[in-house]
Image 1 (cartoon, rainbow, N blue to C red):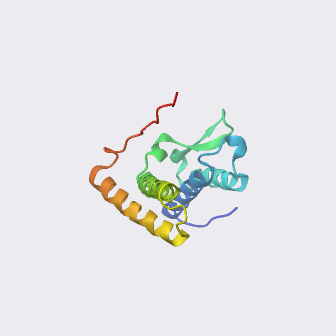
Image 2: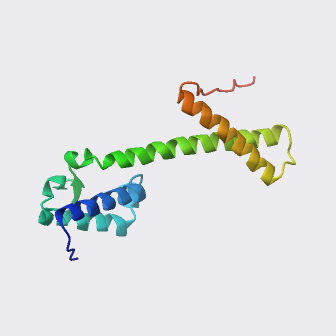
Image 3: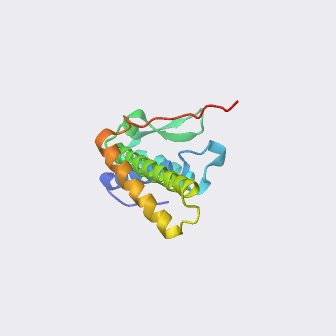
Length: 150
């Protein structure tokens, strides 16, 4: 592969490839990785030296692949990844808790509730959870275990 760009442009490309592969393969075991994405990441990392960015990746004999250095993993662009992760966490938490509560209400109170009414109920719960989390974060979130019946 031949890429013609500046050092800064190549660094941006590396960041995008790193973030993309992290999203796609970050939770997979090595044997389960989606190969064309991890292969592309390796191709880009291999080219880093040619763009004077060799300090951001290193070849690991143990794993047989190029890996980001600690310096690269501490790069400011990782703040974008952290921001994304945080946003997804809160959105998913609110949505899942609201969905759970709407379904529980429907199962306990009105088993004939329409999908539209269930969605409306979920949106109401989402709004309440969003307000609570914005005000208190996880402070008031508790896990309540049901006691086993004898």
